[in-house]
Image (cartoon, rainbow, N blue to C red; front, top):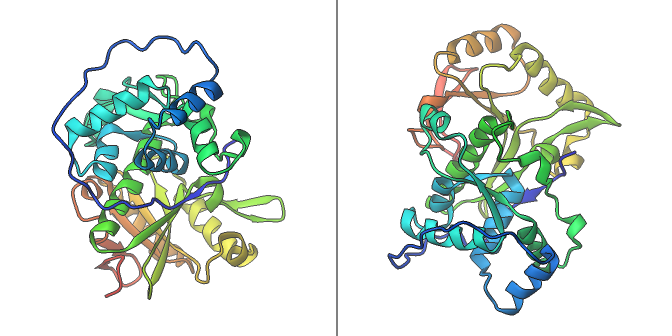
Length: 306
């Protein structure tokens, strides 16, 4: 079962790097335990605070592409990003896969390696944060990079939401706290009422706005989903569970051509919860903080205070 994770990246202002590249060779099998390899890397001071921040992001969303990581941590510099990620892969800090390149291109994402946190990375993150390895809120099996993982393309959409919100927030001097799907889920006793794909909390010293995330690949039963969000609003102790003072709005990203059908359904159902809608093609090309359709008044809105 996946574990709850709530993360906030540290020091995410972009930093310019040198222009160099390392070409990846075949990675040999790790011949010592992950714990021993982690100790070796820490003793050599081979791991940077940026590497720890990469681990933090992967704990929050499970997996990130090289292109997403380069935007988050490498000033959108592909050569420098590839160089460092190759090193982290060879240190077993990261794992990577490349089985979904055609699907990524069809989605409008840059075809490239997909990365997740390796066993050594989990060991290092635990030591760095004074945790036991088993207390790191990361479930490796949930984020398999093999072709058989049919959740992966949906997970990539969630990672793109996280990346775009983080980069956009940093660009306007805001911060982002990200809840993964387990941390964002709401319960009444032991009964799960709703499980979003995540929750994004944007804030600065004077302002805060919170958004549940729904990334739809065309299979969502929106009639039930609308009911679930209103039921959770009424029946869960969401203030205590999420540590928020206002019930979040819901950001809905739907496949091309599906927005109007969802809008009409929301207008017919009239839920208490506020829903903001974009189609995927617009989402991956437009400002992540602007151009969301507020279904109630039928007008585009931004996520920042107006």
